[in-house]
Length: 145
Image 1: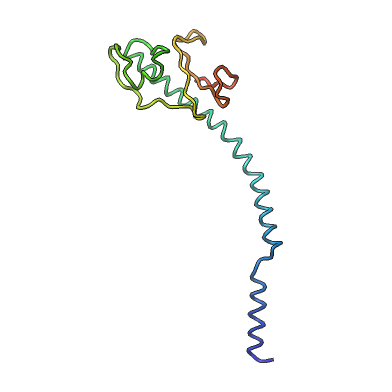
Image 2: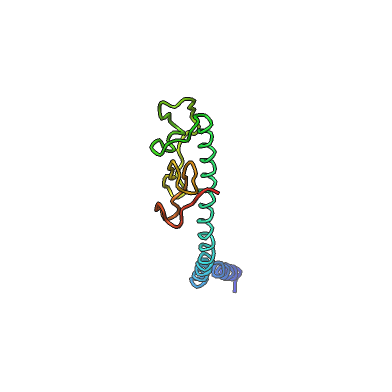
């Protein structure tokens, strides 16, 4: 055998060993699918509690803004004025100042519910999110703490 033949055989054996077989590639894909099947549900279960916490934080911020409105104007906004009174002057309101740049929506993309006077525990107003169901009066409504 010549040196050239020996080198060609050596190169061929290296080339044959350096490639992945179809079985190896399929095995890697199956392993990745199993890992994704385990990790994705764990991640999804963390999304809803995070949205609920974000809604409660935003509700607390809106409560503070409503209290600032009451301090400035000696009353809370009416149901007709709504949370928009924190952004735009509802008219004929002495002492009004803009408190917010815009009215936020809840993490599910629906507006927060504001009613004045409130019906829950004799408050001046009700303020809450309709929650994941986006249904007013549903069991998953989110109220501020």
